[in-house]
Length: 428
Ligand code: NAD
Ligand code: UGA
Image 1 (cartoon, rainbow, N blue to C red):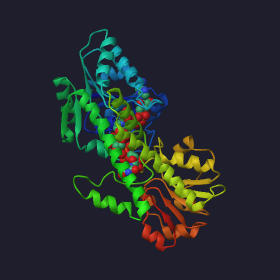
Image 2 (image 1 turned 45 degrees about the horizontal axis):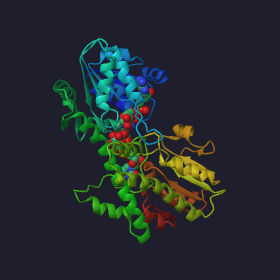
Image 3 (image 1 turned 135 degrees about the horizontal axis):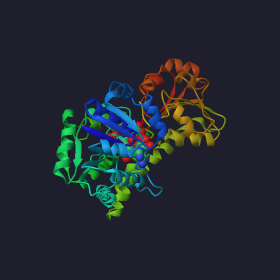
Image 4 (image 1 turned 180 degrees about the vertical axis):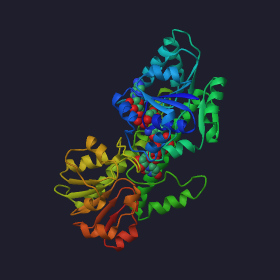
């Protein structure tokens, strides 16, 4: 099929590359000229495992442009994958979606299926349809579909190609059939719904996952107070199939471009419909508190932060990505620098992006061992495999004082303590 994807970011680029690899003819459109120029030169603007190779392998069926007109001419199916950030009041900013809908409408020459893949509030589909109708001077036939995306950064290609389910929301049987055909090669479970239900499914899924994380984080406070080990507690809970072990890792909380904004967005959506979503307000609050609790642990072991050399392992909001959007490391490092610490940071991939968001005072190094050299204490902020597997004995020999504060609960605490480290986790 001929597919256009508007917005060549994490979701759009992965969608384009994956549909191209399934044999479709794909055109990715982005209004960022620099991004499109580098994509044409084979340079991928962010780190996502396997993406560069997939784009190279499928270059015959994957092209790039800055022109929405070209996208609308080519794509029988047009995916909208533009940002939907939070407004200062937590509401969802839909200006990108509105603008793209208008531009598609002005350029339509024949039947088109416009698919919203961005995460949007209920009723956005109807508003997109209305915007297209208002600007559709030639009265071209079209359908609107909500097809939320559930991929995770760091495993985006795998998630796209092996989805637990595909949600297709539309009032048009014709559009649903075409969408089913497009996704058929994935052999995945498809749920077709009305547009509003599809839109709610996405916010509900992200909010529920955030809920699991905050539940584990709340438990971690009780574990700290009682001397229990949160990792054992969540293992014991998670083995119950009805609960499931995933998304129960306690630590410094969830970050990234989605959970924080989508939880806030869903609270606002609920409010608009007259429901006070107290549960989600607590989820968001618990998430914020975890960073403060972590900082208290740093103060507890160092007493005075001023003039201390603190090694930081991990900066990105999660492993296998260089994405720094809403990374918990930002607030933690900013606070410690304000209190007078020297921060020596290591991240396997995100240092170059961190330089744009963190204080200029941060010193970036090339290995976890360099970060440990002469450090008064070592902080673990991202659960990278490389950091899980660090050589603790070597680290101990390098540090000024052997103190580790593990914000992701990934270090073997028994081993660390046996080696003479003062180890603090989040609830263990
Ligand atoms: P992103 O910022 O990485 O990419 C968005 C792209 O859209 C950017 O390259 C931007 O230049 C482009 N853009 C903005 N306005 C445009 C316009 N008028 N015309 C053409 N291009 C335009 O964002 P993302 O992380 O891919 O997220 C996109 C949407 O998908 C959001 O709603 C997000 O919540 C949702 N989502 C993201 C993920 C994820 O893991 N990142 C997963 C599922 C859903
Ligand atoms: C998340 C969802 O998992 C995807 O399904 C969804 O498509 C996406 O948001 C989105 O809508 O954009 P992502 O943000 O890429 O994906 O990453 P996750 O793996 O979900 O991690 C989010 C954050 O939660 C990270 O900061 C991670 O460290 C943290 N986390 C995750 C925990 O603190 N504990 C856990 O048990 C799991």
